[in-house]
Image (tube, rainbow, N blue to C red; front, side, top):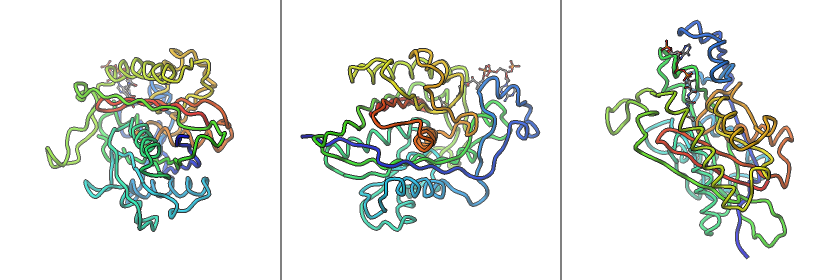
Length: 323
Ligand code: ACO
């Protein structure tokens, strides 16, 4: 007998305010045609004054708890993956804990930028399998719009705000249900931090800073690293890419998604895509895409789901699940 972890509920939340490419082209020297052709992004959601990461996270968490048919009383741990916490400290997770009226257990944040949700899922899976926790609320939530340089057309067109969440729960694997997290694989290479970073922070400049990126360099590493970490996941489970039913990737750029899918030999209709409407929501993008595909019925019980992401650090990783 062994304990395995399963996703028992998903949820998500997007700010109401939409900014289209045409609207952006009135602020910076860009065009709908350039953005759509290079990235596949048509619009993004952006928070309004007073709307914070914890507020988006709370909504996504409540939707996931409802889907799982449980209450905050049933949760042991909250993990929030975010690059844009409400405050330098305390963690956004403890804030969400209080907002949920949860006065037991504990919460903490994980910082792995766009790979944050995969990192958080990996930590939660390990905690459950080791018996440290039984139900973990895993949230990816970001207000990346607040760390963008809105005068820099090479970055501001690429990102958006949002939140997604899952409830991960432990089960005895002798129950006959094969649904579970099959494996997670994490990587980072700090030598590559300069190609995607924020030029400020509480421990250096004392400012929040702005996101800076060498787009071409990031693109090159993304396609190579994502295909490699996908192959690593398949090999660890004695599977091949023909076993994959759905790729639920981090939504950075349609060209990166197409490149990764092609390297894995997957068809376009096996890839869950939200980048056209959400842009890159960093740690929130995978749980947002997952929730969409679960709720509209594309993802079905028994299917093999591959999630992968790469982000600043560089960090990258994958999670392979049988739904
Ligand atoms: N509108 C119009 N022109 C622009 C814009 C814009 N928004 N941004 C840049 N340009 C111009 C540049 O100034 C440059 O002009 P020049 O030739 O006169 O100097 C020209 O377009 C080409 O710029 P490149 O940066 O070479 O364009 P490229 O084809 O590489 O596309 C892009 C840029 C879309 C950023 C691409 O490199 C990319 O997608 N990289 C991956 C980055 C990414 O997804 N990061 C997300 C975080 S990491 C992750 O999540 C995986």
